[in-house]
Structure formats: structure tokens, C-alpha cells
Image (cartoon, rainbow, N blue to C red):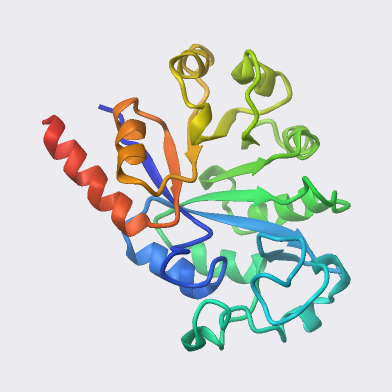
Length: 248
């Protein structure tokens, strides 16, 4: 029986503010197999970890990430929106994260947030950081933007790339494969027997987001998806253990 890997979505984002070191630390302690992060670029071209293009939702600032220098964005409070006890949380750089993460026994899913703003050279900047920290073999680089997937594939055809999508399409797996994607990451509602069959035929890893309900988790475990992304990794680890015990 294949073990479905559990990725903490933006860290343990139901327990701590998403994409902060507090959320990543809790994810590491939860028993998850991996962590999912989101990468955008500052005005001075530094990769930082934040989901939205605008800082408004998860910090005390306003405006776009791309209009802040690293020094400016580091001064924002990235935790109080979640809870006042996290008021000391700041936006994390990819470099800071990798210095911490590379010593953890975890897999990494790095999402390039280029579907709204196509940051110039973000693919090569991120790839170089991963290479420098010897993280290429432990990383999947994903994006909703197929141009980013293609660019990463051109830089290094060996690294695992994943097309992220919530849109139904005929022969989706084959379409993604032909665009340079070696894996497929889909919204749960796209999961059906036909898609699973397509991925298995191509030997293409299939990972599913964002799985927080126990019934959805069980379905993914049952059909042996390669991975799930969840905001509650501590719960997913527990449900997976129960499921595996039940199957013995």
C-alpha cells in the first residue's frame, strides 16, 4: 500500500499565521512529511514567502509585495491578524526558510506565485537558492502559471515540476506533461477515476489540495494519491495512521 505524503499547506496554517516561521515550526513538529510555501518577489528582487500579491490580508501593511524593498517588508507585522501572541512574526525570506528547512527530514513544495504577476527571473532566482542549499532533490516546484513550469523545466529537466490547477480539462495529465510538468496538483473536486488512470499511465505523481475534511483525506488515502496539502497536518497524520491500521 502506497503511503500518501502529507504536506503542511503554508505551514500548520490553522494553528499559526500562514507562511511564518511559527507555522513552519508547528508543521515540522506535527509529523507531516513536507511543507508547502508560496514565493513572491520584493522590489529589490528578493524571494519572500507570502501567498497574496498584496500584503493587506496577512500583515498590517497595504499595497503589493513587488512595491516593497526587503527592508520595508520585514518591518510589517505578519502575525497579529491571526492572534496577538504572534505579533512578533515577520515575512520570511526564502533564504531564511531554507537555512532552517534543509536540516529537517522533510520534503518541500515551493509554489511560484506568478499567476497574477509574472515576476521577472523569479524561476532562476528560486532555482539558484535551492541549488545553493542542496535542496533540488527534495523539492517540487509548482505553479498555476504554465510559463513558470516551462521555465523551471528548461533550467533543469530533472527537477520535479507540478502544474497546479482547479480547472477541468480533457486529458489534463497529458496536457500538463506536454508542457514540462512532471507532476500534477489538483483541487479535490477534479479527482476522479479517469484522472487517476491518466496519471498512472504517465507515471505522474498526483497531489491534491486543500484537504481538511476527514472524509476527503480518507478518499485520497484510499486511492493512494501521492500527496495531499492540508492546513491541519497534525490531524491528517492522525487520520492516516488510523486508516493504515484499518487496512491491515
